[in-house]
Image 1 (cartoon, one colour):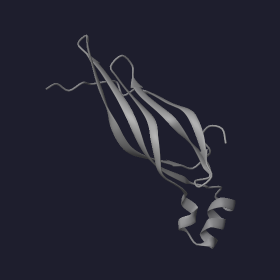
Image 2: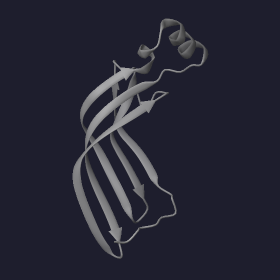
Image 3: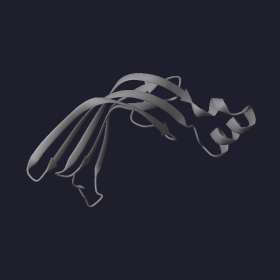
Image 4: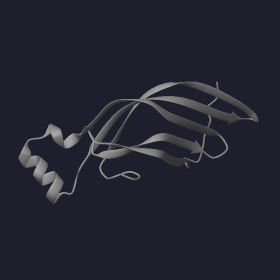
Length: 113
């Protein structure tokens, strides 16, 4: 086994936004994270398992403060995504495919509404 080191730099791209009334936010249906020339993973949302406005968990007074004074409107998503992982090391490329359970919490609108 060998550890692959990087500079810590990576690209994070979000695409194909979809709006959820339940969460009051959009979420990206495609997320790509890539470390230049070594590693990339692409997540394509297969199923939205949960979407909700996180303010619904609080009493009305806290909701008013969060929304109107702090200008917070957090949304929560639990997603099941198909992933494709690519790793290149010492001139050899490897690919893995699978399914990942992941979550997104957003405090501002992502993408178009």
